[in-house]
Image (cartoon, rainbow, N blue to C red; front, side, top):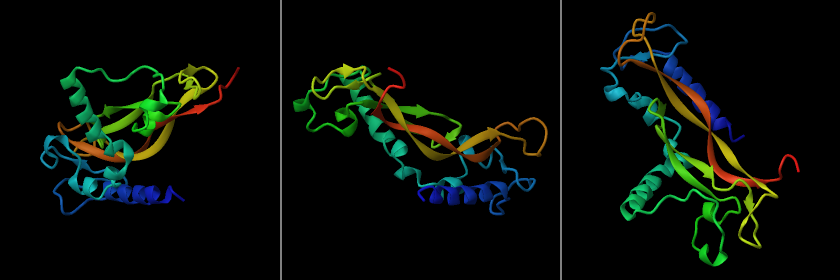
Length: 197
């Protein structure tokens, strides 16, 4: 049931990409193939504004919404000279009362910003597990009795590819076509039993 809005959007987006939009100048193209946008139509290689404006409400998706705060925290760490956390921590309950979920988890994780210039949204927050095992709630230290694994969420994105304005031949410089695809984005970590003892 939760996939229905995404599937409906994918159907709409395919229609927008495959059919010529009379409000935008460009060469006609074959039915069923994505429209090829020229460099003049897309300044600085950006995606068509009508696709972004009527898109999949990316701003409400966690991997998109976290990017601005992660970048701000990264600038703050650089200013203070403090490194980002990259090792499995020792959990002390008295220090975690005000911490976020990803810091209080027995499978803690951190976020990093993944950037892809040919994808829209270009920046997404990816979760990275800090431990190979999980943290024992009694000792606060990592144990190998459990494994940390990433939790993956499907996210609909636009992917741009070079194309030929004339429909055949080598790509036209600065011209791009766009297609929709689902990617798997790591949004957190959880603990599981090992596959083998």
